[in-house]
Image (cartoon, rainbow, N blue to C red; front, side):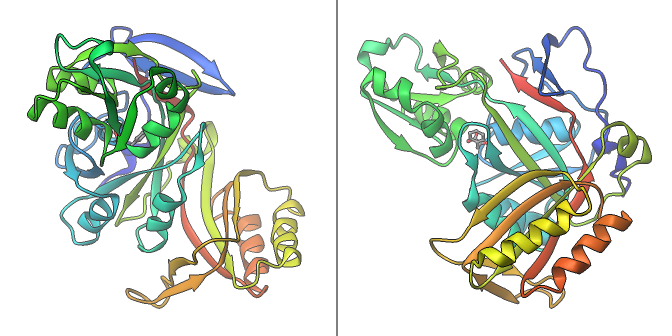
Length: 342
Ligand SMILES: O=C(O)C(=O)Cc1ccccc1
């Protein structure tokens, strides 16, 4: 299937954009509060995109941004969304992996490592949270707030100020749906205003995140690798994600890996070291399904460049000589934009 157009952003039409800004070299598009707001070129209508949550979740918006004509497939858990692609029930899966406020969501990232699906695209979403309640309910009547754990973490200060208990649920829109279906009058949800619109809740407050700048990065997984169009290569550049895992956490191994990048003047866009806590399971894709390996220490690296570039190939083959396990997660065109809902 020709997925190539998935990675070509179009100019959003003036009618659906209320704000266009620049931040750290990225274009920021904030989209009106439309139920189907999206900002990318049309791709095959039949594309099924699996995401964790129910309609109105941020991950659904990321799916629609990646592919506006797609059929989003709601899933209970991220693992289910990945599985749906693996077994052919979906074409793509959307996984939120990091946010500017909280850094890498390692639990989500590690699910990518247990699957052999390559990363084919990234989407950056500006996340603007609202406090939502049943129509007519005022802030004074509230006892608790429910939402996705990441949303609760992003709004910690605001919640403390409101003096409300908080409880995690599967996803932000799921919280809104729960309020509506159980007619909960003492509980609020943190979610997008779009979720409020879908389930008929009132917005009691806008922008309740602790920092006004709150961007979440989503990775899109597919069974099929995408060829990054040449136009994107030149215009926006290509990124590669990889993990380097080892058993000891030795600083000298870490330094050797980093020097393989620096000696080639490669530019890293992400670097995260995990060397404590439970081991990480990584699928050895060379050996196929079921061959998971456990590593206590993992380096998560993104860099500019494609796995097809000569210097990248050189760096990877040098790193592979060290006593480490290397897995390339995918090369894909870097998203130059940040999309968002108001
Ligand atoms: O719960 C959702 O709506 C999700 O899609 C997960 C999420 C939660 C908070 C920020 C970004 C993604």
